[in-house]
Image: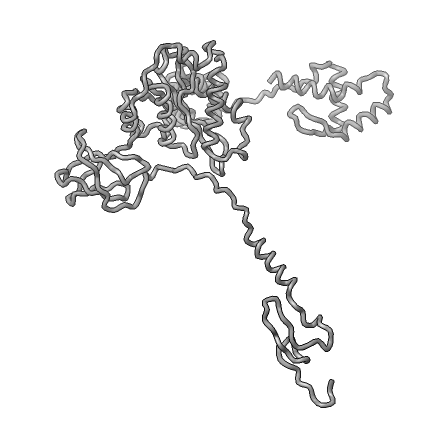
Length: 466
């Protein structure tokens, strides 16, 4: 309030200071005051205001009598409508249970005394006395955490990117907590589990299997298919608590670097598709980000990753393939079939009435393996196939075809113009021309000397008429 009063006083002083000059005559002072009253001024709130002549004269008298302090507006002294003892009771209720809302405290006051102020009144009062709910919560101190070795912990998240090829892009990325190296990353057109697994799989192929991965609670990151992949590879899967994003600060800082150094230089209109997008980003990561000294660790990320001890070896191709297969559990019907996403498959009749596990590649539902209690039970034979991929599979669009350069309508127009140029206009022929003409197609047209071009019939002439 004091700052606002000072700002108002400065505005008033800047407006009338020229009027208190003793060298001005009465006529000059009056003319100057009228000019100020007829001009818009930028007020304390940043808006244009007009000040009347009477107000200018009053401010001038205040400046002469009391100086700059007299130009400050007086503080308002309104008599509070809410009794002091009621506000004190509300404060004691909030201190007793800090999780109580202002609306609930109003209800308690209304139940006890029969009347309560508006909840906004209590909220403003709690802010003034330091009892706001945000201030009433216990303050938590977050210590700095860093993994002790490479591949001890990977943190993953998604970044919303530009529009490429008419569709929005997303970056799924994983960083190694110890070295800050980007171990796995991939750009895609969908924010789903498939693109997350693609980024995780690329990181495992190049950098080995991490001991644990840390993700948030997005729909793509709480999938049972991702949990199955972690179980097959022996990785622990941790999720941050809802509303507590403090543990993902490292990867958010990496995303800030991506925005400021990669996306700012990218021209989405010149990128042909995701393949080029991933190629450009891979070059940026391996040539710039991994080789630049990190301000927190003091070492380039890739050098710190390699020097921190031999990371775990990557899994075999068979183990990696098995880890990223999807699985669903289904009951075998009395006809010896199972249903999977609209498709019907025939299985071993010995499994009738049993709940089996169907393992498959989400992109190819034609090949499904049946397992019962962890034992392979052969392949499911497709009986009725309505879908060839998982419903959640959103395939990346193919790059646009190379234009042929053929303009069909332009070719038609050129041919039409050529035909019109070669057409014979009979009305332009001189009188007495022969009755026969040959058109451009080589067809001889024979007509009498007098011929009606409208009706395409000979003109009948009577004796005595031309």
